[in-house]
Length: 259
Ligand SMILES: Nc1ncnc2c1ncn2[C@@H]1O[C@H](COP(=O)(O)OP(=O)(O)OP(=O)(O)O)[C@@H](O)[C@H]1O
Image (tube, rainbow, N blue to C red; front, side, top):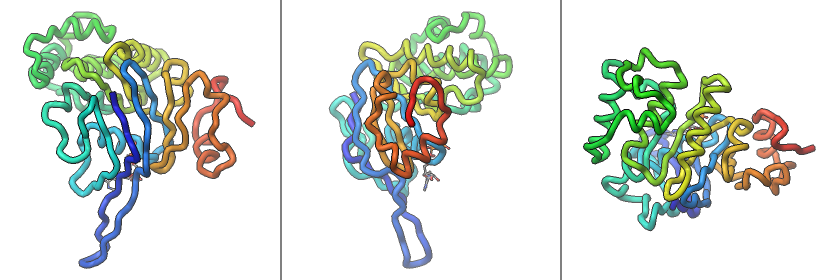
C-alpha cells in the first residue's frame, strides 16, 4: 500500500544574501504500511510526525526538499504529487475541529466533501452511522457537537471518498478516555480489507492495544518499528540517548515493561 524507502526531508534556510543551509527534519525513513493495517506513528513533540503526514499527503511547503522514495499503490508520491489522489485514495483526518465550517450543518458538509471527492451520491446518514453517530447529527451545526462528536464528524468527512489510506493526525488530543477510546475503536474498524490507517499520535499507551505496528520517531529519525504485541520485548537499544529521552516522555503503563 505505502512504502517509504530512505525518505529524507530538509528545508532550505536562508541565513543572509549568500549563505544558505539545509536543515534536515526527517532522516532516511524506511517502512511500509500493508493493506488493512493500522500503524501508529509515535514520537515526542517535534519528532517529525506531522511533517511525515504532510509528506504523504503532498502538503509540504515549497521550500521542502524530499529525497528517497515514497510509493503508494505503485505510484511515486515524490515529485509531481499524483492528481486526484489526495482526499480520495489518501485522505487526512485533521487534528483541528476548526476544519469544520461553523456556518453549515454537518449533513451539508458531508455532501460537499463527497462532491469534492467525486462522490455525488454520498448519504450523510450512512457516513454518520459508519463512525458511530446518530442520524440526527446531520442537522446539527458544529457548535452543537461535543469534542468527541466533532472528531467523529471529521472522520466521516475524511472517509467520504472511500480512501485506501487514512492518515489520522492526533485524532484524540483533548478528549476524555471514553471519547478517545471510541475514536480509536472506529479507526481500528476502518483498517481492514483494502483500507489502511496511519495514526499519528503521542499517546502510545492508549493506541498500543489496538494497533498492528508502531513506528517510533525521534528527532526525525526512525528509532524502531515494532509489532504492537511484541512491544515489551522491543529490540530498541534502550541505552541510547534518544531512546531514553523518548521513553521518558511517553506515559508508562502495563503495556510495556523495561528496566
Ligand atoms: N516548514 C518548516 N520549515 C522548517 N522546519 C519545520 C517546518 N515545519 C516543521 N518544522 C520543524 O520540523 C520539526 C518536526 O515538526 P513536526 O510538526 O513534524 O513535529 P511533530 O512530531 O508533529 O510535533 P507535535 O507533536 O508537537 O505536533 C520541528 O522541529 C519543527 O519546528
